[in-house]
Length: 455
Image (tube, rainbow, N blue to C red; front, side, top):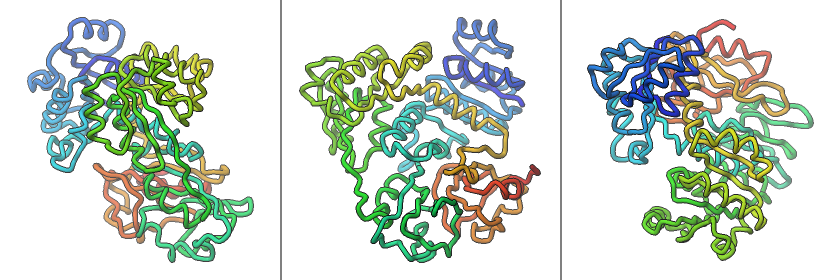
């Protein structure tokens, strides 16, 4: 497969190495002579020196003939322009790395649609998803990454006097009313994939899919006493990663305090998020941490641009008794050593925006029509993500008309620009990505039906 990559930095260089080692025909465009020479010496790839947004350079790289065009520079404008030009030249799939929140806010202008780019990836937002996974629901099935935080999975136990007891899923109308779907039920030691007529019983343990806000709102239907407790989260740094994390922790149950040493950034954050407490100070200072009672926090997230400050702040808060420490790593050369000593330092999770970006792109470039995201709870079945082949008989049909075998349920549907828990009337479109819960015995049948392949 022919792949063109713009940018030979930490993300682009990592991608070119992995993809070329996998046998792909990789061309890298890099404007910096030193970086271009380094890639040329160390990797088995074709290297062109020049501006990635130049149509002349893209023509030389045969961008119009590539299967994937990856714009991975640190310049958002270059990535958008080069991706747009490559798409118009004939590139099959274009992916652009972006940073500015403006470019992924579609309320006024859809940059992805108007530039003709198939996928925009934001390193800081991807890192924030990993952090939010731990904070929002520590015990859930870890498959949230398939929709970049838009959909998550939780397990809820049905307790006595719940309103849902004795009612079937059709009567509850969860998908229609709330955008939530029950994908699996554990009942008296066995597991079942529920259908419309499945009746909820006391003691059922439900695996539920939906957006985080909706999941929080429907818990009371199944467990009246299950009240989401207030979670105290302390953040260090008004960085893009923490800004993205703040958006994911918008539920009132999160009591958030953000510490930032730059006064102007403090003002900007306070204006964007009036419901949180913003403190002008330095979290590497023990005095500041004590004044803000960070030792009482359920979570402390250090995500400034300075890795050394992040580590020091985590060490300080650990001594104060903060329960769980999360860390953002900016420099790739620090990532390995910090993860090696993460447990010694008392850090529960260390995330890297660059590594998260590379993993997301590699996952997209992967040509496999389906991938197992996780075993279903109890090991009875799989949670899989599938790409709908244009030749599949499912294309153009609403989900209610699909002839899916028993013990199979579609829990998420991803169109090019959106991801949601689908309703019965949602129509399947070619190249949609579907997340389904299915039994082992019907796995091959479902995969063949949706992907058009034989397994």
